[in-house]
Length: 471
Image 1 (cartoon, helix red, strand yellow):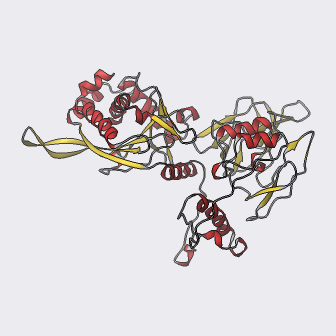
Image 2 (cartoon, one colour):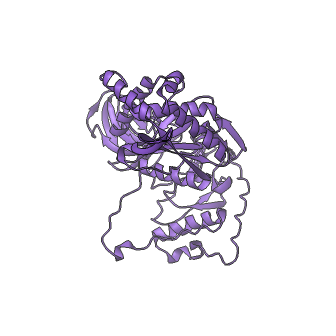
Image 3 (cartoon, helix red, strand yellow):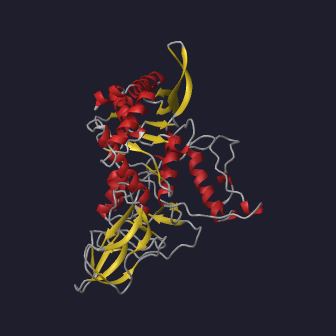
């Protein structure tokens, strides 16, 4: 028997939703034959079977969430005894909390907790350290989670001592060594008179309200004046429909909250006269029909112009590390393009835009946009971005105030090209105008930097010859 666990699907991915099983229990499967489609918070992937044989069991139905390291399939490959992949023991379903293996033996897993209950978590010494609610993700960096997997530690059982209740690498190492966790700093007491939901006893609330109270208590301890209230009963005013927040949409929600809470956004607006560029683009599009990248959308030229701007304004091709208080300047240019997939927003990345021609960039946009719509993007296509462009032009709208794609520090929004009357050489003429909005992190850049960056873009887009020189 061969136990196949959900493999590591990429940095920062810890779970996925089952979209489709390609096999059924009792069927024969060949090695490398499609086994299951799983949608993570970044992309949908098809996982092939690592062995050939008869499928003995499948874990999870369509719509269920499975975690990295969880046994999802047992295959009878003729080897007899069950062989587990990796170094960690098989992960039980999420409803059952597994105990850490310290020393030569592992403690028995506690019985499943009822819905809404809190689970006391014990340190290796047996003392109760913290309480966590079942199903609530543990705050931890991807590197910390990877360390936990390598050491065979259930990160849900590790006492957190980091800022905001995050589990640190040292917490994981202390737990794996059987040592006591470091002292957790006490949360600051809110000033008198600041009421929060957390003041309501959890036993007097429903399941959802208790979860909100727990969340609000933690949030209020770190963000002054933040008061998260329970949702009202919307059914009092009419029928409602509930849909689980999963996969890509949940990832978008997390990213947006992170960006808006951590980054002080500032926006700079300008307009580019793209009359000559549009004439050149349409002429070349007709001439290059059928060639790779021959569609030549305006976005291809904007990507090239943005790359030119980033070369001259390094602050917008950077990231701010708040923990080490450093600005990380990136000497490569990987531009993300926001794509509406119908299942949520994804940002595939065009790599090395400074070394590619406009035709090559156009071909990359066609390939990535198609894969995004079909849900076949590779995880690598979603990683490594340094700057993002979002384009609402095809859908209409004159302007957009976009949210920065954390941990980047700037994002450019394109509006719809419109014919407008403008003054040129003392005369009113009709020109094609492209609205541009740059949202940026005011911690590492100022308004003057934004004006220079967008000004360089406007200059490039107003003269196709300058773009060709960049190529």
